[in-house]
Image 1 (cartoon, rainbow, N blue to C red):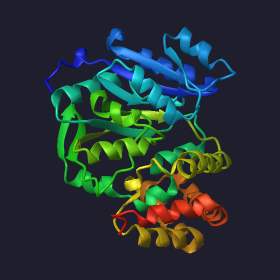
Image 2: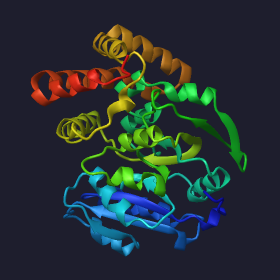
Image 3: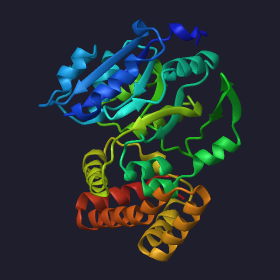
Image 4: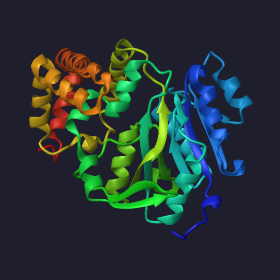
Length: 341
């Protein structure tokens, strides 16, 4: 790939929506207020039939609105990837917000400086006015299960090469597809020409699957920049989070088993770690003791959500997996995949 000047890269923001007016205006404003040429920013909104003001707000703020009859965000990404004209493709959401006015400029500088890099991602953060549960989410950057299972980013960062933009550090490293990362949404940036065919492949493909398939194809050079922050205003309560787990488990896993690439789950010693997590979550002394350690280490009271969230997620996943035929099939298929041990 020829080296490009930073201001010549066009950036497409992929935003699937459904009744998303609550956060959408702030989301779009954070994009429009970027210190970057407006002609080099494209906003594509794939709407799943909203009955609120989502479409109106999107059009008023200059986004191109496309119809997403299947409603799920992952099908919206297919529609937006097909219509995108940018060099870079940002997986975004209506409840996301860019963390700084230089976000787009910083991303394009990295891609310009490192033509071999296929992916850039930063840190997910919570806003000052977000509920406490959302601030706990910022601490774990995922859900309790994945936080426990996958510590591979820490290993990669220790062995990465370090660079900087205007004094802000970022880490460049190669990802081994057999040592996966749980990457895929909330501000991850791809070179569009490398992922368009992956996203457009027939059938459902989850956001984590896109990253995993890209790495498996050999495009393994990635960048992580902690100060490249993206707000994710998506949790108001534990009850809402449990509902999200249910919806994601049904829509993203159980109903889409035939097309999923679940190797991003395949951390080393998967079966053993899963059993340990179940014990950790179900026996309070383990999770509470760990929480006290984390609270004292970080002096952050939001860690107090951790044992409760871990317990609820474990109970929920066990219940669905036991009582649901599709759930049992999901666990069996996942455990049978290579590389789980």
